[in-house]
Structures are given as C-alpha cells and as structure tokens.
Amino acid sequence: MKLLLILVFGILAAAPGLALAGSGWYLLAPPVVRDPAMPTQEGAFAPDWARPLRLWEQLSSFDSAKRCEEARTQAREIAHEPRHMNDRDRLDQLNADLRKSRDSDLVSEAIGATLNASKRVLLEDLKRDESWRNALCISVDDPRLK
Image (cartoon, rainbow, N blue to C red; front, side, top):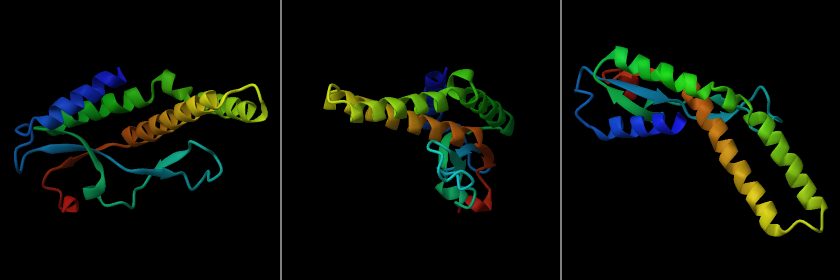
C-alpha cells in the first residue's frame, strides 16, 4: 500500500497541470529531526515545525482542497498501518543482532554490513512515516511558500 501511494504521489507530482496557478493545493510533508523530547531514543523523530514551508517536501499537488485532504488522509493512514507500528520492535531486534555480531568471532563482516544496511533503511522508513503523519495541505497562494 505504501508503495502504491508513493507511485500515485509521483505520478501526480509529475503532472504539472494539476495545480493551476492561484487555485491549487500542495500536500507538503515537514522535515523531521531527532525528537528533542527523547534524545536518547534511537528512531524517535519529530516534525521540524520551525522549518519554513518552502523547505518542506512536496508530496503532490491537487486542483482542490478536498482532493488534497483525501490524499493527506491516505498518507496518514499508511503511516499508521500496524506493520509500521512494529518498526520500533524491529529496530530493537536489529540493534540486538548487531551487538551479537560484534561480540562473535563467528559472524562475518558481511552479516554486520547487512544488518547495518537494514537498520539504515528502517530508520529512513521511520522518518518518512513521521513526516507523512504530519503532512499538511497548503494553498499555492500561501505567502509562507515564498
């Protein structure tokens, strides 16, 4: 489902005529940073609300606020899917496996590299989910975009 939404957003963003000047809407996702409320929690991210809107990621554009809100709802639902709620458990397991691999002479460097790569992908997924959960529909005329 997440891949489908990525494809839909990509197709919509590639169609420049969808958001007409003065009447369109952008679905924007805020950049995320490590959550200052949980500085020691790996994989804890929070939206960077202080970042100007012009620096947010444009997920797509729409010809109406209604269509933008529908896409925003879908993005939030996908970011909240139960599969993604288990990402923190997966991160804990990857960290445990990495500790084991460092403590063992039997584990090859290749396995450690694979675990590290999996961890990087998982952290990127967690960041994207946090960003999508906080996406907003913004009019193309909004002065904060300048």
